[in-house]
Amino acid sequence: MSKKEEDIQKEDIQKEDIQEEDVEVEIPKRLRENLYDRIHVSVKTMDIIIVILIILLMIALVFGIILQ
Image (cartoon, rainbow, N blue to C red; front, side):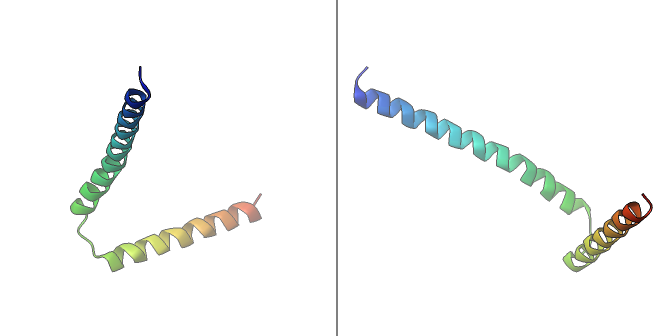
């Protein structure tokens, strides 16, 4: 096999790898978009919910450490 044919084959393999990576990235994105489409809340409300959950998690961790 000539050097040129080897280079072409390597490029094809790299292109296949890139295409496979794109597919892996698209699947979670679709799942996330489907989830957000089903939940009808504003971004501000979602941010508030996330902050509250983080605060509750921190409180639970502190109590867990204290009551050890």
